Length: 263
Image 1: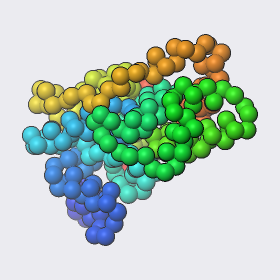
Image 2: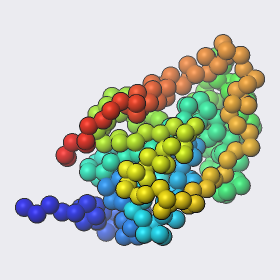
Image 3: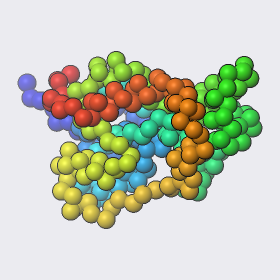
């Protein structure tokens, strides 16, 4: 039996009437994005610049990976697109949370303008700056524990965390064969070079298309500099589940991987 081309398979997966996200994926494929390789944009990992690079590359006729926006998860991608290989960038979980908190505190400005949802407004009324949120994470009184839990559930970029995207180290291991490229934000340029190679795009053809987007003026490292080693250890302990997933992905990124198994 004749094997369908990846673009045909992906197009047939997306049926009329399905979600807007699926419609956007179909539009990307029609525009010329790579239907067999995807880039998952985890918030606050430098993905906006890579997505912009992808749009510019496709305008040049280059098959840049299809882009999965924030709401997608690993399990949903694997269910919807079982042949898709996946790439993404990671960041230290605590630093990513600080950057995400501040981004939503600014409502995405200056690049975007995404107003708070009512629950986010309630969280920021209690925590008007990130330092007060971090300080509350260090204490165990009922009000602080409750307010911190509320913020992590309702501030968008805190809710969109590694547990949201990857569920657990066990889920990571289950789908490891399809995670072909795992980068780190400190080495974004290396990740882009590897992503272009994975997509079969010569680097010189994409030269000049990448531009860093909305970098924060206050870096998480500066925020964390006010805390001693003991408090930093306690803060990281509050994100133990996030660090477990992060470390499983980092280890996978270092390990040699076989070709993805057939679905």
